[in-house]
Length: 402
Ligand code: NIG
Ligand code: FE
Image (cartoon, rainbow, N blue to C red):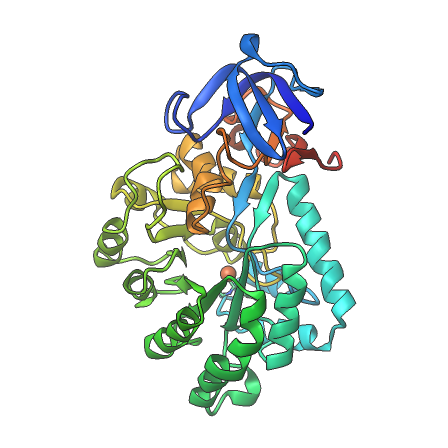
């Protein structure tokens, strides 16, 4: 069993008991890795001997980001649609069908190359766990291959056959729901951990969404929902009703939506408890790229809702893989404190995936971490747009330096 000591850490974010504040911060710390797991955390002066050593040189060390919402399996891009939006066009989700056409026409290797390129891009920015959705295939074969390719690089894969009704089913949405619940789910489920529905005007109504999510649950998939992105609607409360791990976007919420989410809260801000909450996953990259009002994060946090931050990386509404960018947006535009934003991007993402082995750095957790080129996590928001990730370790293994 080989061991690795990450030593001389100026500020260690643990998201765990034993450190200060909601981030469980320890100063002048060290962390021992054995067999890919955190074996010990403590003061640098008490650090045990190890086979190898990484000197953090007084920098900050954080758990790797947990990006719990990304759509990486697609072909083509929609830069022209983005330019039109910046010139005043609204975002409606209508461009999803453009990407569906390009994705269906792509080879497996082309899709695989895009998924790996974006996964690597995210890794260089500190993301060590990334959820990947299907949803740009929308045929039995294209959804299954999207998930098969996603599963090659992530254990967090989500079947989103109910992203939109594809053009060939435009006049018979009931038939498309039947396809999603039947042969498409059967082909997708072996490669998926989760099921998701875009529950929104213009996509799937609440009855269709409930039926699809229930079919997924019946074959053992966990539930997540794209909810309340473009306007108020039933998605958030449907997610709570079904015990969803996460409802995502949450841009337009009523008091009843916030109350429903708060009723599922986990009491401990630390990530060690059992996750039973329905997390509100906020995706500020989407509001940035669609020039839309940001979700009211303060209202959710002040009500006690568990909040996660994720990128929503996709070619339409949010073509960013950068969790540091999302943290900076959340702090500047959504009035989250830097500590709340960093927690939401690490432990919050883990809660949204019902994981306790990632998003924190405590004995027994996976040694997924990043060393910053900065003395404090505060710099992630304080120095927006700056590549601050010096080194990333996955399971204790140093990845290529960014
Ligand atoms: O989460 N809202 C639905 N799906 C994606 C956008 C997809 C697209 O525009 O291609 C989202 O924002
Ligand atoms: Fe999304």
